[in-house]
Amino acid sequence: MAIYQALRFEFDLNKASFLALLQVLICTLFAVIVYRLAPVNRQDMSLLSIKSYALKDSFLSKIGDAIALLCAFVLVIPPFLAIFDPMFSPIFLQALQSKALWNAVFVSLQIAIPAAMVSLFLGVSFGVLARFCMARQYLHILPSKLEHLGNMILMVPGLVIATGLFLFLRDLGWGLGSSYWVVVWVNAVMALPFVLRALMPMMYQQERRFRNLYLSLGVRAGSRWRLEWPLLRPSIAQAFGYALLLSLGDMGVIALFGSQGLVSLPLYLFQLIGSYQLEEGACVAVVLILLCLALFFCSSFFIGGRKAIGALHARN
Amino acid sequence: MLEINLQYDWENFHAHYCVGISKGVTTLLGGSGEGKSTLLHLLGGFLDGRGELRFHEESLLSLPAYERPISTLFQSDNLFPQLTVFDNVAIGLSPSLALTADQKDKVLWALEKTQLADKADRFPQALSGGQAQRVAIARVLVRRKPILLLDEPFSALDPALREEMLYLVNDVTLELGLTTLLVSHLPQEASLVGGRVLLIEHGRVAAHESVSVLSQDVAHPLFSHYLGASNRSTNP
Image (tube, rainbow over the protein chains, first blue to last red):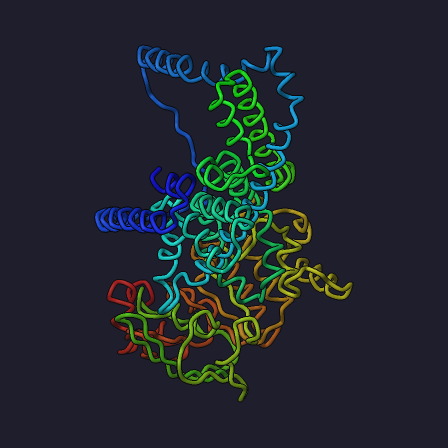
């Protein structure tokens, strides 16, 4: 918050960069302690589908489970439904007609789609490099380091990175015109840990099982991508979806760099609520959620190819 | 003649293989962790070794795996689950799966030969273990590489099926005039396919003999430790 103030209201760049450094220091210190203490996570993936065994439990415990589930249902579902409530008020139609809303939708897409693409590109590049280094002499220490590198953004808030990037670009003489690209880039990097989480297991698994076979048959580059695509596309769709949603919903970076022409949906929502237009704000929230749902669906439908995979299984 | 003089180091394991292997089947025997598979991986180009590797006076060591005159059958995962049986064989001819009419005929011929012609459109999931390894053998047939490496590919099959597969390997070796190296942990398998045996110990070639040493009344001194006392009584 202090960085935000220093940059937004006081425009004291020295103070901002000092505060950013301080935050990086604190976060790094904390992360180092956590990594020292945390045990190494060993994963083993099996392709065998999990068999389910009948559970032995009594009638009484079944009832207990049912009550617990019902309670969870009652507590969790209504807030979700309540979000959609403004859809039925007359203000909703009015809000839909406002030009500012559609501008914000457009700006959001303009940020989220390139950010997701950049994030996916970075994630795939990280994955390809990491899996190449896997189980090779001298290089085998790299994959975990690469993953840590990708997760670095979790240690340092996006706002801090954005500040650094902004100051850096300013030194290069790009000035305020670069703010759109700062927002896109930082959103992409912020989504990277989730993209990696979605991509890496499948990429590692392919490498572990088929590295020698690919090598012995000379299946490389394009041919290999074509072979792996049907197996990777659900993970890629998931990664792309995560990156999209994170960039759509992000409020940190855009709050700092948003300007008259660069108002995304969350920022617009924030501004409406800030000026006590709560009803309109609620409508905008509905639009934001619908947009998120629609984009995630598109991502898993077109990239993930649910149909294609279903067909593959049906043929077997 | 396949001439091997290879060194390889990984942490505490220091291997040095020095042997010449002639046409026909050679079975690699030895305990677990003695370096049988390491030798095969060095030959196949999946590990980088130092030294010399020559086949008919041509040096192979600087070649990447896919340019060596070698086909490999792995213990498992020889087939891509997303490809049909036909494509799994075809990928041995063209990584991009673009085949000429001639090559298509070749694939069909290999499937016929391995009794898989009716399974061409199936996916590997729908095959039994034996059928899956036969698809891999069909790929060996279309690739026509003069060296064949087998890394215990049949160890998961039941005895009768394993025997059948070994006969198939033997037939293919004779018919195509291959130099075949078979890693096995069962001396019986070596006796079945005949040819020669290599005993691998501590990353060294401890013995290179005709397979008949395994069936002698008094075990060969170099093999006696590996075979153990119990094994000899079953091999009178």
